[in-house]
Amino acid sequence: MPADPVLDAAAGDQLPSLEEIRALPKVELHAHLSGSITQEKLIELLARRGNGDTFTPFDCRLDLSNALEKCFDYFAKVATVVTDLQALRESTLHVLEFFAADRCIYLELRTSPKQFKLNAVESDGVEVLTTKLQYLQAVSDSIQEFQSQAQARFGFVMEVKVLLSVDRGRVTSKESALQQIDDIVAMHVQYPNLVVGIDVCGNPSKPTVLPYLIPALLERKDAFLKLPITFHTAETQDDEESRLVLSSMRELNIRRLGHVCFFPDECREEVLKGGIHADGGCVGIEICPTSNLVTRGLKNGLADHHFLDWWKKSDHVLLSINTDDTGLFSCDLSSEIHDLARAFRLSREDLIEIQRQALRSSFHPEKQRLLETFDAMLSSSK
Ligand code: 6MZ
Image (tube, rainbow, N blue to C red; front, top):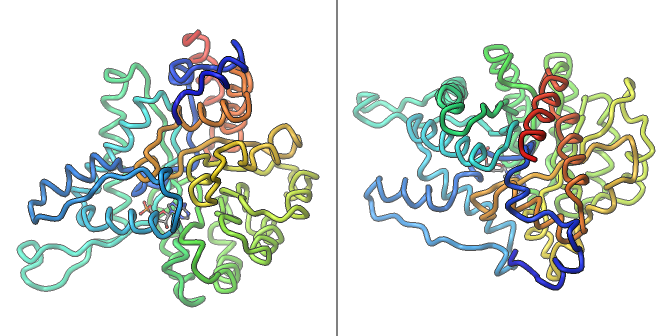
């Protein structure tokens, strides 16, 4: 969002500048791998293919019509270039570097593992698919490669964990939901230290598949009980679906909710009241400012965002500010935080508090250590 001198002056010295926010250590909990590939990188990968296919960069904030359709067109376009393990490794590395360059100290990256067709030479003319485990292996390789160079390049080592996504777009029956869940459980067994949770995502403008998905998750809950879930919820208006997610939170270990743009008032009040989880744990609320602005079509800007419905409303809620899809939304973590800070006059202390809340709601097994790292980096950024 361009600078607004009147607004910035009204906020006085309290309003942190974009540069100050860039210097802060930050936390990203809601980033989809494919959507985080920048448009420039997409163009570069397409050009290298040399088959004449191109991509015209766009800024979704400039035209809010058919927003969700355009979002899912972007993911489809990415899928036409990330068609093999090498392209996956390269684009994952690119996304990790993008977040580290913005001083993100902890990235919880989510993705739905795919199977790629081997080319005719590799497969001797027979159709052979790579496995989902190979997909995760490629992501893991890129994380290791990134981390081996991170200290020298960025002056710190960003921690990275992975959430495996259940894509509701690929759920057509309870069986297909079970298949995705079983694949996730199997990948978690192979990568117990890397995979720290499950994400439920996918096009919310399509008819709900939760009547298949929730029973499938319940059927397998013993298999993934150690994996907490974050659930895309109320990205579009579907009150019945929101109520179903809310009523399943305890049993399914759903610890965070993504977007919650159209969460019904009574559902929000229940979350704010606390007591959702038997252990008294908080509920994480993942806000994605530009994504929410675009998909909700907020013509007056972020001032109409639902952030204030949650911020400082309850000790039972932990907020995080996230990017969702940095490539698609032409944003980064600092710009998202900055835009929200300007819209709601958030101070540096507020922003630091939100980063701490994000860390506390992360699925990382060593939150205390991360909080200490955060504090140490914070004092060195003053
Ligand atoms: C719902 C979204 C999303 O898995 O190929 N995804 N799901 N709402 C959103 N808001 C805009 N943004 C991204 O990353 C791309 C996938 O992430 C989900 C969609 O299922 C999309 O296909 P991966 O790495």
